[in-house]
Amino acid sequence: MSYLIYELFYSPDSSFSFLRLLSYISVRAIMAFVIAFLISLLSGRKIITILFYKGVKEEIRKYEEIASSSKKGTPTMGGILIIISILLPVILCCNLASRYVQLLIGALLWFGLIGASDDILKIKMRKGGKGLSRSKKLLLQGLFGLILGLIILNRNTTPYTEEIMFNLYIPFYKKVLFNLGWLYLPFIIFVIISISNAVNFADGLDGLAIVPSTTTAAVYGVFAYILGNFNYSRYLLFDHFKGSGEVTIFCAAVIGAGLGFLWYNAYPAQVFMGDTGSQALGGIIGTMAVLLKQEFLFLIAGGIFLAEAFSVLIQERIGISKIGRRIFYRAPLHHTFQHRGIAEPTVVVRFWIISIFLALISIVTLKIR
Image (cartoon, rainbow, N blue to C red; front, side, top):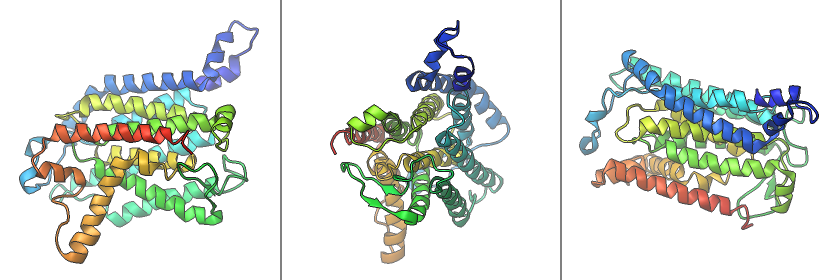
């Protein structure tokens, strides 16, 4: 909306010349961050109270020694707060005509609905705590990946030039790795499914998932700003993605909403994001990775999520299925550290430190190529 105001009313010779500020990505990114943070912070208590009195509460399953019975009854579906706090500043600060912004809003709502459906089913079926089946989740996640791929790989709807539409890039390498052609489509589906579930696995301790989500969004925000700026992208030997700077504003909203949510989600949590939040965050991070053609960058920036997902994969597919015993004490990985007697806040803060370290390494890849 702010960008629309700039386009409608800005003129160098008018009394509204100050509106030129709204054309700057940096100014609108700061606005989005501040608005998202304030919405999350100021409306958080009200939303938590509504969730509590509506009976939207967590049912903790027992994990022997690491059972968290004290968390039973904590309001869940706090992801609603995250979604609102991202969506409103995006509408206010982004250029809504941008294909990048439209696809990210679509991802936020699509994956938020997947997570909300899962949470609602869990609340209704309190006995087993089961929500959407794994197959239904994968189908819905894959369907979004398919739609996303068909849009960005179609010359009539893609935000890219035809020369770079099918290109695959990797960190630390300045040239195009492959031109995948239409093989890019199944790759996009795989990336969306993998990242959305990886973030979901990390949501198990108070504040654990939200900080790595914000650091990963910050990394993609930096890349979006550089790729969207012709001079910076040329200097750093990247292909220029016209209009991708709008993703920076979206990332700023994610960071602001995430920090506001952390105010209530830090140990001891007053609210859990639930699948509503973790699916929404995973979906938009995966979409950012695809839109910026930095899918492999997630292996570094999202290293925490990667470790969590691989611990589950190894435990289920190799340990339990193949050799008939557990490889980790518990999976996802954070439960292993709890099982070994490390306090929950200590595990969480150490994961935060690692996520910040990985974010810095990711940014270094801009120059070391």
